[in-house]
Amino acid sequence: MRLPGQALKVTKEEAAGFLPERPWDGHKGTFGKVCVAGGSVGLTGAPVLAALAAARTGSGLVYVGVPREIYPMTAAMCLEAMPYPLPDREGMITGEAYFKILERLNACDAGLIGPGLGRSQEHVILLKRLLEQSEIPLVLDADALYGIRNHKELLKAREEKGRVTILTPHEGEFAYLGGSLERGGKDVPAVREQRMQERIRAAEAFAAKTGCILVLKGPDTVTAAPDGTVFVNSTGNSGMAKGGSGDVLGGMILSLLGQGMEPVKAAALAAWLHGYAGDLAKEELGEFGMLPRDMIERIPRAICSLQKHLLI
Image (cartoon, rainbow, N blue to C red; front, top):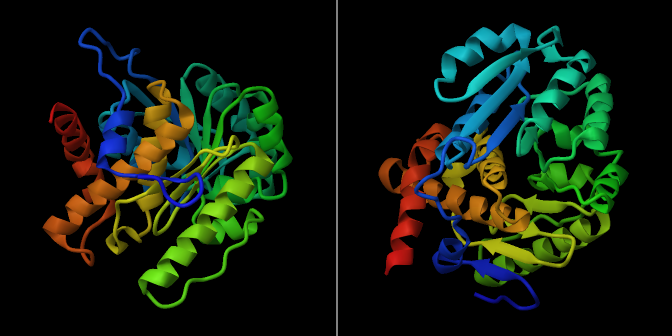
């Protein structure tokens, strides 16, 4: 559905058209090797949620790099994903992890950095080096966004080298990245439409300036590419507004990137599936009690609904 301007509203029909094919003779390598790097003491669930979401979205192999101190806990929670320990200090990844993370990234098809990472000046340096040296598509979420807030020139440098970077901020994170949005007013159609248009303009301008693909999370999640392509999501509900939901989305984008999808469509499709899985959870559990893990469990049903739509 075409919105005013160049933005495209992603409906079920468009989402079904984005869905990648699943070759009958594929193997683990066919469907992408992906890597998550993050986690810290007190934030152990974030990388696990991202990794499980990636596996549920179809990745062949999923690796999870976490601080050594939380590795045993992570390993206990990951049956299908493959965790590995990274050098740490006081429960947080240190700069000494650089070569191990880079080595893993270089062996994968896409990487996600940030879920539960924590914040430190050492992380800023680590992120800069990884952005400079890693050639694969990268998704930056959560604390990785905070780490690059003063170094957005690295995003443009990656674009100029033909390297894909996807940022997934909510509105608060978007603000400290330099984006500008006014808070919405009453929940009435005119106000909601005005707010959506503002989000579209802000996301489009940010993507064009920085050279990244921006996924601006929230009501009517907007996915904007540097070339002016803009998608607006049509699924989701307020029950998804809970800690961990963004980690699930990050893992889903990571998975579709690793499967070889066009990056902007991978991000837009992940946003639709993420919201639809949330809508399925809402129907069964209600907005108050649903959890991000419930959304992960419903990703297969969300994907199946698109596959069935293609057969109609």
